[in-house]
Image 1 (spheres, one colour):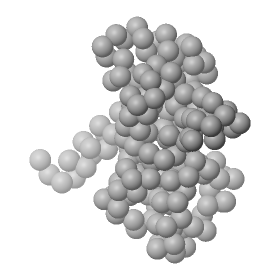
Image 2 (cartoon, rainbow, N blue to C red):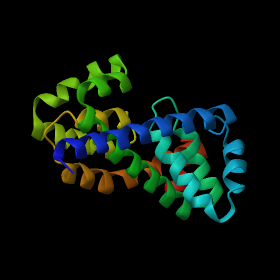
Image 3 (spheres, helix red, strand yellow):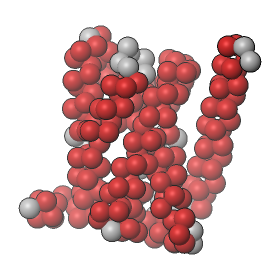
Image 4 (cartoon, one colour):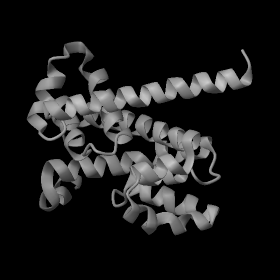
Length: 198
């Protein structure tokens, strides 16, 4: 198989997977599982022993498909599986989804990034890309703290020269804190979050 044929095959597979994810995301969206914790709980619970796999796939989709709100699935993970397992499944799904986003950005470049990142967010963070070292530091900090649009930043990171290896390490090491804090905030609210953490 030639290099050109291999690239075409890889592009076809990645595009097919992306389109399949969009189809499933729209289907799940119409079922209401991204808008209501109880609906998501009921859907996942019907999967029995496959429930963790189904939930992780849903979490991956909410990262890759920008129309899906991630807050519901984060809270549902903890409610469905408990604090420890819920955190692990949330973490796995979000990390895998982030890596897929970065890979898609690298494959399809700025046109895809501009389609998936709204113009306001893009313009707000585009100056971060001017200096690679500064970007790496700011990106790691943004992923660590649950205050920035992580998915958009993962896509924008694909436009820089950051290596896939370095990007992966930042995601794996910085995501736990933000996933934990964001899940706790959704479950317990701002007032009770401090008590939960202490």
